[in-house]
Length: 299
Image (cartoon, rainbow, N blue to C red; front, side, top):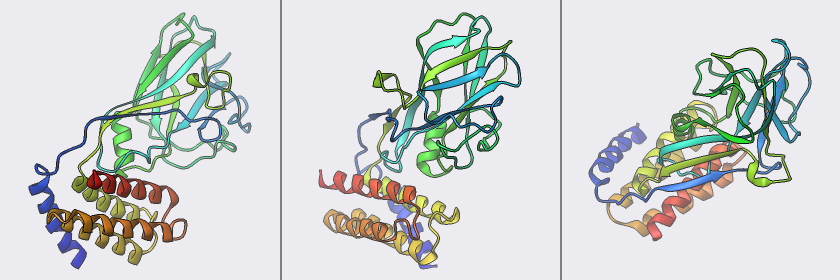
C-alpha cells in the first residue's frame, strides 16, 4: 500500500533528522480540575447501588467490616500533552484530611481502569473493570498523621495513555496487601469548594518531542485509533495519515512553511470529522499535537 511505503521513508527520515531538529526543554503540567471538569467518585460495597460522585469527599479503605469496602475512581485529562512527549514523572496526589479507625495499617493500590464509567452513575455494582496488577501502591501506617498529601506513581501509565497504547479511563484505588483490620481514609474530591488547592491533582514532568518526532507519533496514534474503532472510517484514517506523511516529508526537506500549511489542513480535516468518524478525545489529542508542532515550527 502507498501509505505503508511512505511510512518506511518517513521512519528513515526521522532517524536521520532527530539529531538535526532540536528537542524541546522539559515541561511541567499540574492537572487539578474543579467539580465541573473533574471526574472522580468513590463506590461503597455496603451501598452497592448508591452513587457518590457529587460529594466533596473521596473515601478509601474498609469501614467497620469486610462488607464495607470503599474504592476511588479518578481520571485526569492528558490531551494537552503533545504526542511523542517523554514522561519523566507523573504523580497522582490526594489530600487525606481525616480517617476512621486510624490505628490499623492499610495499603491502597492504584489500578489501570479498562473501560469507561460515569461520575454521576457509577456504583459498586456497575463499577468498571480494572487491571488486577497494581500500577502503584501507597502504604498508610498505623496512626498516620492527617492532614497530609499521598501520592501514587503513574509515570509508566501516563506514558501509555499519551502514546495511545491504552485508552485513558483513569485509575481505581483499592485495598491491597498488606492491610490490617478496618481503616477508612477520607480525602478531598474535585468538588471540594472551600480550598481549591486541596483537590486531587496529577503533576506530570515531561519532555515535548521535536516537531518531526511528534508527527511520527501522530501517525502511530492514528493507526492505533483506527484499530480501536475510535476512528471508524478507513478513508478518513488514510487521509489523515497521508497528510501527516506529507508534512513530515516537507519538514525533512526544510520546507517548514509548507509543513505548517499541511498541518493546518490536517486540523481542518479533524474538526470536520469530530464526533462523526473521529472520537472527540482522539480529535483533541491530534489537534493539540498538530498545533504544538505548528507553534514549534513558527518559533
